[in-house]
Image 1 (spheres, helix red, strand yellow):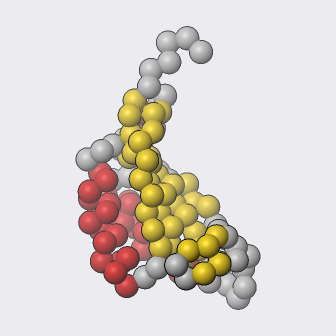
Image 2: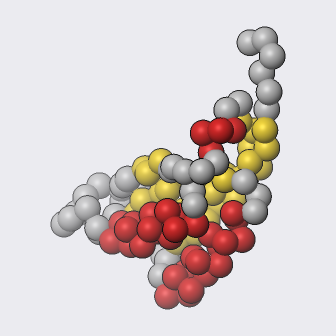
Image 3: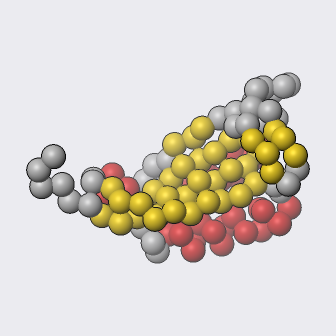
Length: 108
């Protein structure tokens, strides 16, 4: 692992109801995010109690997580776009400092 260069980015883990996945991915695309990973059918416990990760009636009736790595300057843009959404809907955004070895993959 010679000559690995690390670049700092922010990792956002956006958790929301599956029916709103299109809203969030559209927001990320419009913000200029180069890509993201979607994890479907989350299980966990929060303010609304325990949430089962299996599909009950349809794929929109579950919680999903979008994982995205972005430069610092995109974080406020994304959070401002999500703020009105989270005033009306459940979910959360986790933000972490990360290091990546191929920063070109995370810029548009």
